[in-house]
Length: 345
Image (cartoon, rainbow, N blue to C red; front, top):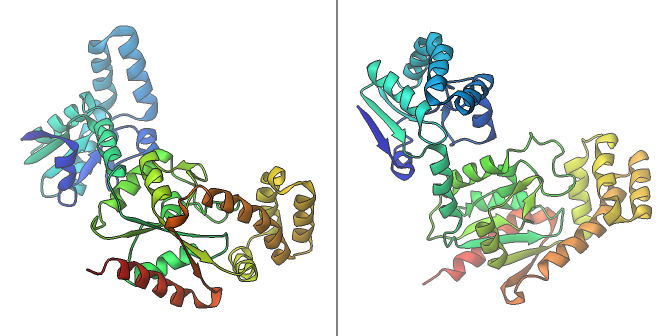
């Protein structure tokens, strides 16, 4: 039996019914529903060939070409589907919920699958569905502070204390600054970042506060959804005020294993903002292995940039929390206690 379902209904059962994405490999790589398995009906080249045929010769000719291309692989497709859905229940989607998913659903039904579901409107409808999530009234608590304040570690400690945390930089695979891509895996597309962010938001309790780090609209090359960013900028900010030398030592520790040549590229990237003299001094400090001096020079720029962004916030919603790098666990406990006290009846 084949059942077309809207995205919301199909996704509610995603943990029990495997979902296969029959789009081409490049479509899946650009962005996909988290947890879906790519079993492409066509390769990238074949998809282009069929699309060109459709435009030049019409639907009927394109369907025949598609059948010729995929016919020899139909058995393999069924075997792959059985391997991920041995109980005979499976869901299928393509881009618009059209020919590709309908064809594969028909094939799997004929091959003996007892329960075949398709996503009405396909991946395109899923993308429309998740945009609504970012506009929800999430109760955000924003963790701020100058570069080097240990905000990522503080978020991890808050999670250990039972607080809800969404690590935007972790999802974006970037630490936010010109140096933020060092040692990181390649960033996802903004599209897929949104998909994974939707998945994470689906696991939180909307009635409780959610900690996020203070961010710019862009995290590296990834863009935070506008609706969520507006809520982040309007939320209460907990500004961690940490001495500069504490932050210098943390940056030295974080980037101490990175080669001088790797560090020079991001320094040069911010030369205009640092100023030629400061950039030259930072590069010279790198050559002599003085990472602490490099940190001090670059922090002058990042501190000023952060202050400019902080001035755009409502001062009544900014809480300054003094802290030291040697007591991040105690600082995390104070932050958690502060928020819990706010929610006492």
